[in-house]
Image (cartoon, rainbow, N blue to C red; front, side, top):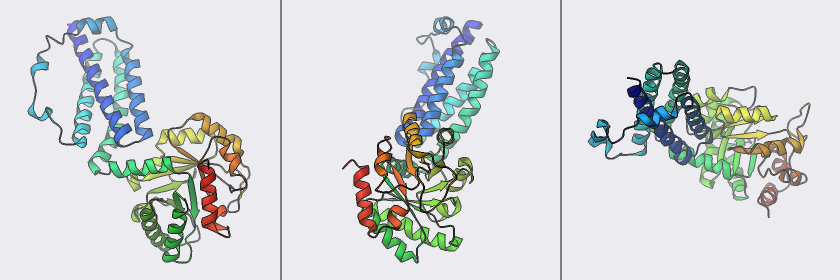
Amino acid sequence: MSESVYRILDASLNRVGEGLRTLEEYARFVLDHPAHSATGKQLRHDLATAAGRLSKVRLLSARDTAGDVGTTIGLDSEASRESVTVVVHAATQRTGQSLRCLEEYGKCIDVDFAADIERLRYVFYDWSARLGVIAESGHADRGASRRKCIRDARLYFLIDAMSSDEALASHVAALADAGVDVFQLRDRSASDRTLYRRSLAGAKAAGEAGALWVVNDRADIAAASNADGVHVGQDELPIGAVRGVVGPDVLIGVSTHDVDQATEAVRGGADYIGCGPVFAGRTKSFDAYVGPAFLSDIVALDLDIAAFAIGGIDAGNVRSVIDTGCARVAVTGALRDADEPTAAARALKAMLSGK
């Protein structure tokens, strides 16, 4: 009987490994999503660790592919897949069922192995549900496009609500043409209604110019105005709660002030981070500034998401930022207070692009 159990475990381990890899490839190459890709990789690692509790010799000895009656049983529905969404659904079902088989039959051989699989199974359920929501929503392409844009971005500008929708839209169009890749609407003095109207105008103008539009703190306004993203600080809503409001295809950025916060943001599913404050700025005052050394630490982490240096950065000190290996910056006063904002944007973008 134990040989039959090992045969079941061997087949189920293979099915789970194949299913996890199928879903990880979806997260990596279709969604272009670092956090979901990392979760898939971690699940495969955890599966291998759990399998290490079992005798590899017993598993391989029990394998009998030629004598497996299941290899000759097939369904017409398995011969083709209508879409990537169907592939994701099939892999999810196959993997979840096989994990349950591993857990139940594993109890006959090693209770610690079964306990490991149970823990892995619950992590898988959560991860696969998130992937399934994205696949079923049909937003995978839009989310992937936004994540590619944020990775390619170099110059990020924090913009206030300005005097009117038209003034903001015109300013966004001009600065995007001058090289600004991302705009973040931040104006704590504006009413919710004004922020909503400006965000509608800004999102439209940025989209037409090929730039991204992000809303500061307010996930509700970001979702309502079809913004590309929302940026939160350490004291605002956690990433999971923000994701519940904006959905799977909207970017989430997080402000970080030390390495621990940066790594936690990545683990939590942030699409990009702001790193600072690097220098004393004209907009906000802080008790302490992290300086370029913090940026060097962030670069050394080799994160899978974009990291933007922020805080007092302008043409006079951006070189010290670039020298750390960080070639993405977020600015406010450097453009807002410039005599010629478009010229200032072009100059910064040229330096960030190594020109």
